[in-house]
Image (cartoon, rainbow, N blue to C red; front, top):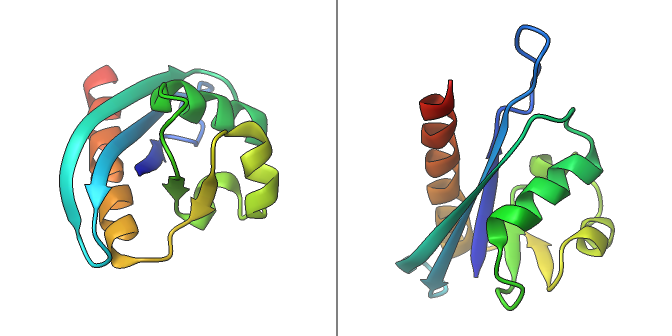
Length: 118
């Protein structure tokens, strides 16, 4: 499973700096077991659905990773089927505790990486 998070989708001083983090993890039903790796990507584009999914796809970097999991707000609460058109393989919104923990790990990674770039 890959948990993703994006930090910095807001404009600051007329510029954008989005950092996506993808945490590749093995999980059980109730917890994250181990992190197998992380991927990062940066975008300076305005955060449209296309730009957001593009930076996430670049951070994931492994087309066989599945499913990709995120909080609903990352993609402007668009339906899963719409987001999945941009992100292959499978995409879904968080449902389990383990998925939430993986997305939370991605949140901390994205935030930290963005702070390093500022």
